[in-house]
Every structure is written in structure tokens, then in C-alpha cells.
Image (cartoon, rainbow over all chains, first blue to last red; front, side):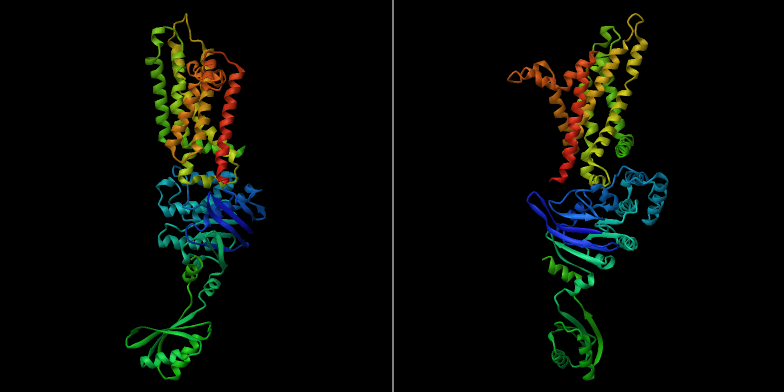
Length: 308
Length: 244
């Protein structure tokens, strides 16, 4: 659906993109992840034909963004960063304007406006001027505008920025729902957002793609260390040495003890069955195991590692 | 074509919804009437003539037209809506022309609202020296063309910045310079005997021709080319986001 091939973009002396390539398939929800200034927004501006790349090619739904910008734009619904909207227009007039610009016949447009208003929960706001609405409602208007012409592809630049937790959940649910049929690209620097909504994440840092994969795959790419937290009722020094004796264990860290039970974080290299080994060791000694919890690398760790 | 019409409707509608438009119209009408009734020699001349109104039109337009034009692009840049607009399936030139025509419609509305002035002059004129409608029609046409040219300059200036005040000052300054070189005293200052050529580029020079009642095709062609020229610059400036 979207094919980006080695695009670069400079703003004066600043090198915003230094050769970005990726492919996005139909029906995927992909998260662009990266620190501020990594090149997420620039990539989106190129895909929506707001500005061209300096070198490299990008095709959207089979159309080149440089040669066929109008065909590309027809197929994309775009929510730009910060949801820029005409604040002196009432919501319904604004949606009407966008719908007309998108060549939706007037009968169909009236029906579509009703549908997107319902989808984005704008019923209470339709008659108001956009300028009077709260940030969360404006974000919804931006989303409604992008959905109006039933595009195959949605490009959302930080769709949940500035929203409260309830609104964030609503917007994420909405994106998930839309993503069942459509291809969605969203950018964010909020990591849980990716785990919550995306099938796949593309991590961009300093104008380059540094990693790509499902959130699970990315987490596995972490430090390669797995660790478990154990809580055992038993003599502390003996427990510690017994745990350290398990094959593959690299470190046993003593944690604060709770209710007289000793707690440890046991780290090992690529030992898949570490929890099992720990369990067997403890049972063999006849100690009481009160907690056993596996701690994988989090997406935060991976992100911090990759975007250093 | 359809897109130009849609953009036009949105722009003109935006003007009609904005309180500042009505302030503009009121200021224009009050200043216009004051110029005729108090500044010019209208009452002393004892004739049913409107020179006293039209001769001040360039000076009114010099400030009022860039005030209409200043928001056209600068506001879109400031609020980021330019990105929304330019990622809709439209061509850059369609937006430039649609926006220009929207502002032009407001200018036409402003001129149309001055119509009670000639009507009253005609109504109260001495029967032996009635108002001659020919020169009045000419002067309206000249005013429209002059205003349309300043508007093209102003919208171009607006596309160069996201600051409306800068857009306004830039629009005024360029228009003022172009009007000024139309005065023989100023044109004389141009070296190498180029004065006449420079003066021929002045929208003021052509305005004077038309409002005197001499309707020459050359003057109309001049205005149309000037408008096209500045709209072209405007399109290039909007496209410049793609080169930066």
C-alpha cells in the first residue's frame, strides 16, 4: 500500500531524513515511533504530498507522491500535527467544506457527515465554532475531517497529543476500529500507544529507520537479558547462593524483603526456562515460593537503547 | 474550476462572517464620503461631479486593500491550516486564484456600497447640469482595476510571511512605491531618462487615465497583466514550501 524508498530531506543545513525506507501493507496499523525531531512529521508531510523529498521515491496506493500528488491525496485522510483547523468556522460548515473539496456528492456528503460525527462522538459540538471547542474535541474534528471521504489510508500525526486519559482511550479504540479495514499510520512518542494500538512499529531516530517490527519482536530485541523476581520464605544467604548456582544465571540482586520473605531479581542470559529452573530449585530445597514474576525488556528499554 | 469556486465561496463566506469585514466596510464608506464632502472642493465647485471622491480612491485603497489581503495567507501559515488545505486534492494555483477572487468579491462589495453617493449627487443636481454617468462608470471601473491590482500585491505579500502585520506593511509599501512613481515629480528623479518607462509601470498613472474618462484598452491590459504577474508570484511563493 505504501512503499518508501530511501528518501532524504534537508531543511537548509538540517538533515531531517537521511535515507528512510519502509513498506506498509494494506490493513496494517503502523506506529511511527521516535523522539521529537526524529523525522516522523517530515515523513508524513512527504507521504501526504505537502512537500516532496529531496531524493528517493515514495508511492502510495501505486501512485508516486511526486508525479501524481492529487491521486495520492484523494486516497489519504490526514490529521496534521496539532490538528490545525479553521477556528472561525462551525464544525458542520468545516466538514461540508472539506467534503466538497473532496468531491463528495452533496447527498452522500450529508450522510457521511452524520456518520463521522457519530463515529468521533461530535454530536454535541456540530453547531459550535471550532474555536470554542476544547483540545480533545478539536482533535476529533480533525479525525472526522480525515475520515469523511472513506480513505483507504489514514495518516495521523500525534492523534492523542494533549488529550486526557479518557479521551486517549476513546481515540485509540476508534483507531483500532478504523484499522480493521484501513491502513493506518500514526506517529507518537508515547510508547504504550504503540503497544495499545499498533500491529507494527517503525522506530525512527535522527532521520533513519533504526528498527521495525511488532511490539513483541521489538521487545525481544532488547538487551537479550531475561530476569525474574522471586520471593522466597527461607534463609536468605542460602537462598541467594542456591539461586546463583542455577546454570546460566549472571546476577542475583537482593531486593527489599517483604513480610520476612527474601526477594531477589535473578538475571540470566538467553535462558528461556529461567522461571522453571528457579521454581525447581526452590521446591527442591523445600522453601516456600510466594512470588515468581518474569520481567522481559520493556519497549521503553528498547526505545532508549535504539534512539541513544 | 470547481475547486476555485469552492475556495472562493469559503473565503468570501469567511469575510462575511468576520466582524472585521464590517469595520472595514464602514471605515471605507465614511472615509470615502468625508473625502468627497469635506476634503474636496465638491460644494464650492457647484457642479455635479464626483472627481472629489475618485481622486482619493488610490489613497484609501493604499491602506484598506492591504488590510483585506493581509490575512489571506499569513493566517493559514500561522495556524497551520495551510497544511490541511494544501493536502486536500487541489492544485496550488486553484487555491491562490480562489482566495484572490474571494477577497476581490469583498472589494467589489465595498465599491458597490458607495453607489448611494453618485445616486444622491445625481438626485440633487441642478437640472441644467446633471451628473454625467459616463465618467462615473469609467471611474468605477478604474477604481476596481486599481484595487484589484493592490489586492494582488497584498495577497502576494501575505504569502511571504506568517505575520499579518508584516504582510500589511509590505503590501502598503510596495503599493505606495508603485503609486508614487506615477507622479511626474517622482518619475523625474529616476536616472538615465528611464523616468517615463518607470512611470508607465505605475498603477496610479493608468488610474488617472481611466478616471478622466479616457477608456483605453492599453490601461485595461496593463492592469490585467499586473494582476496576473502578482498572482504568479503568489503561486510561486506558495509552491516554495516544496523547495525549501
